[in-house]
Image (cartoon, rainbow, N blue to C red; front, top):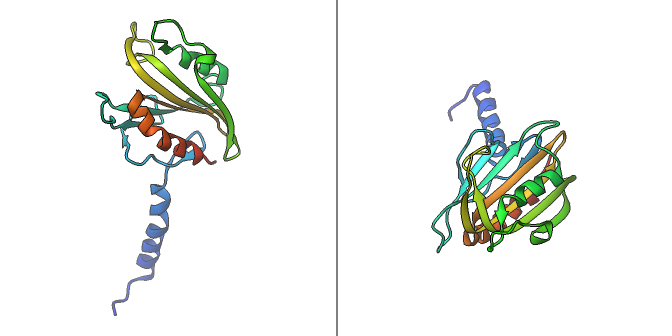
Length: 181
């Protein structure tokens, strides 16, 4: 039987204890969440996390879920963000979205208030926030959540063609259900 030095055994024990903890999720602003299964991590500037969602059969484009945390006093409140997100969509006839055009839910997850928003229409895509023009993308859906974190909101925003969003909805809801401090 081979004898390992005590420090090596402790190091291996620490590895077995820490590795599973590192693999179970991500964190934004003191809010932990499970990493999505089957989505691809695709980091982008100004985002705490970003994932590409593979296109569902019949959709030509992949979807995306971005996670934002701006810090205390930053990012705006729930109502301001709901209005801004609704402003990123228009109805099929080109008219603006109103609050009644989206499904909204309030719930508690992991002791935190969560506002969920679900909207379908033409997404006015901008590659960056101050882009001069938006590209209209008909048949899109957004699933979003605003989580009241320990010191500031954390924002989860999934945008995708409708079929891809529908296929990703269960995973999105699973991520939101996994929220914890």
